[in-house]
Image (cartoon, rainbow, N blue to C red; front, side, top):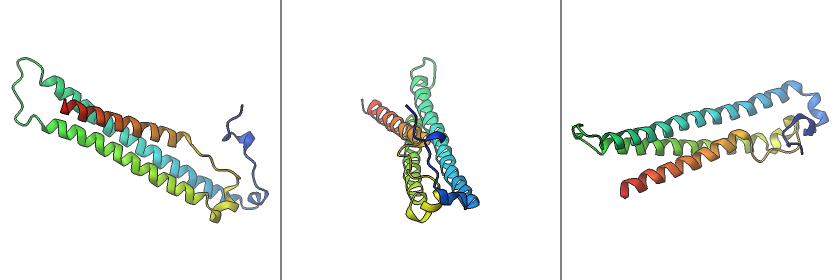
Length: 149
């Protein structure tokens, strides 16, 4: 079974051969959209991971013996929830922007220079971003549930 995004399976339109420069500009733009989404994935991963780490650190820190009580014990928790929430929200917004831009690039206006007939439904970047947003939502829910309990 061959994956649909491999070179062997791509059927290039004949009119693209005459517009090589325009076609490669479209490809550069398409790859730029992928890089932008992956940049957001890195940023969201850092925010979610750092928020979760802050929550765990201060949760365990408060349980240690011989440690003076914090002046504002709720501050690290709210900072942690904020970081996880911001990271998850930013990733969801990035996914929506990605989808809109890809939809535009595959629209009829660019059909002649896209060079391929069918657009992929899922790209690796979109799959990773979607899974990370689900992980972020799960972590956010877990932290909130832990605070309430």
